[in-house]
Amino acid sequence: MGQDRTDLESRQGKALEIHQRLCQAYGCPIAYFHDLDPLSELISSLLSHRTRNQDSGRAFKALREHYPDWEALRDAPTAEVQHHIRGVTWPEQKAPRIQAILRAITDRHGVLALDFLESLSVQEARSWLEAIPGIGPKTSAAVLSFSQLRRAALPVDSHHHRVAQRTGLIPSSMNVGPSHSALAALLPADWDAQAVYDHHEVLMLHGQRCCTFRDPACGRCVILDLCPTGLARISGSRSPDPSVLEPVPDNPLHRRP
Image (cartoon, rainbow, N blue to C red; front, side):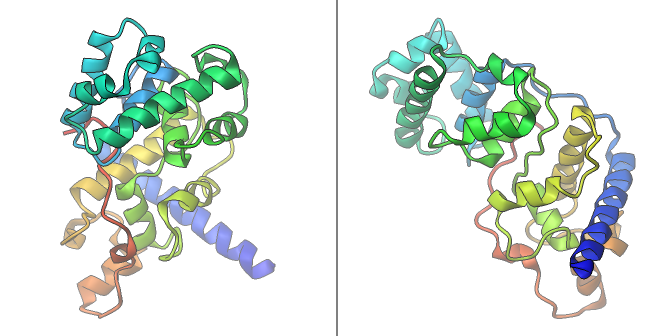
C-alpha cells in the first residue's frame, strides 16, 4: 500500500514537471480551438474519429448547411446523412451511429440538447454521456472540455497516450480508454478547465511535433531526462518502445495544422 502511494506521488510529480516544461515549450495558456455548444461538439467529435481534420470539418459544415437543426439530422433518412458525410472514414457506420446517439439523448433527456450537463459534476456528466452506446471516454471528455461548457475533463488522444506511455506516466500495456482516468488522477484536483485543457494540448502537440509514432526526435526533446524510452533510444539500448503496442493512431481531436 505504501509502495503504491509512493509510486503515485512520483508519477504525479513527473506529470507536473512534464506539464511545466511543455507549457514553456509550446506556450500556455493555449487558446480553445472550438466554441461550439456541447451537442454540436459531440457531433463534430463523432465525425472526427480516425478521419483527417479537413475531411471531418467539411462533413460537419455540410450537415450544418443542409439541416436547419440537429433534430432534422436525427430524423433524416440515414442514406441522406451518409451522403453528406461521405468524405469521412466509415460514413456508412457513422451516419446511423450519430442518429442513434441523437435519438438516445432525446429519449433520456426529453429534448435534443446537452446544455444541462453544465449543472452536473464532471464525473456525473461523463457517466451520463458514456451510458449512451457509441460514446466513450475520449468523446465525453471532448464534449465537456472543448465545447462552450469549458469543464475540467481530460481527453486523451493517440499522441497524448503515446507520450504518457513512453515517459512512464502509465503502464505500457494500458490502452487509451482506461488511460483517461489514470492520467487524470495524476493532475492536481484544483486545476481549472484551462489548466487541464493546456495539459492535454501540450502533450498532444509534443506527440505530433517531437514524440512521433515513428522516428521520435529524442535528441531535441525537452523532457528527455524524464523519458525512459527516449533515454534508452539515445543510449542505443534495445529496450522496447511501449508505444509500438498501441493500435493504429487516431487523428488528433484538434483542428491544428
